Image (cartoon, rainbow, N blue to C red; front, side, top):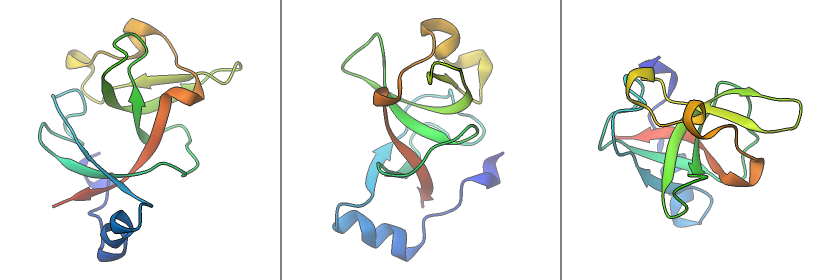
Length: 113
């Protein structure tokens, strides 16, 4: 899974300066092995999202925190079930339930080196 998230290219990095991409610092081990604590990623806030994508979302319980998770499924009510790749060390939808689309702030589109 680690190779599925590409390194951000120069074009993607340039989009940060124009406000089309946003930098995000990953904290914790919930997305191992895909993302590790301290990894920096680029987020596209306007991208279409689908099952399998990695996204940044507002935590539905801890309102002042965000999390990085993978979309595992979308139910018939349009709620997104988010899980970490490291199931042993992830606070995710298995604990707080599926979230509405407005909780998702963007799709992770690349890793910064």
